[in-house]
Image (cartoon, rainbow, N blue to C red; front, side, top):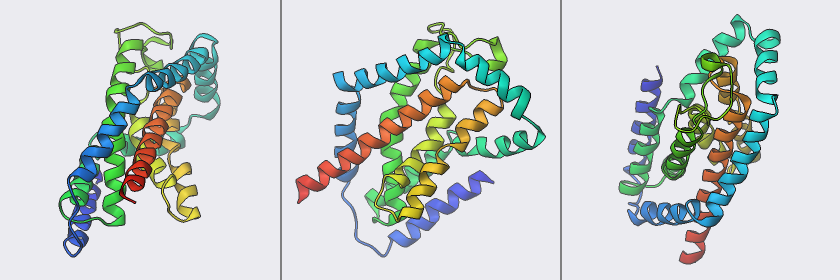
Length: 236
């Protein structure tokens, strides 16, 4: 079903874009380049270090294990499992192809609200993924249902930051941080949260891992927005 939605999103963007003016390819390359410079600069690594430090506090203070135990015993049920099963699809990697398709439409055919949303989301994902992957492997933490411990074991595993949370939060945060009407912004912020909860419900990630994935998504979207403002300022 999700594949059908992805195809329809791309087709809708292409169909609406055919009647509008063409966009320059530089509108994609330039902001992405600026985002990479900021993300992988001294300040960017400092920001990442602060987020990892915050996550480590939850890991080594026992908060992760306490939250996991409480949720499993007091909250998890057949109903939450059903909801989580649906929500998990929203954070799957295949959605990247939808955002890439919309970005290509925005760059090569025409710019529409839908295609701009897809392009901004695609830019944030592209810039944030290397940091996400590096953090996952560097810290090396495992899933709750695998070892029962959130402690870091460098290069041993790749679950230290939730990839599903990252992928699902970026499009919603992009919407929330855009110039959309207030109801859409609120929906964006609220919509960026459920997939992280779903990963905790299924014991695929600890709280620290969900928050780290979410924080990295927030940072990537913030960089995209600042880059977009810089581009508009240069063109004005």
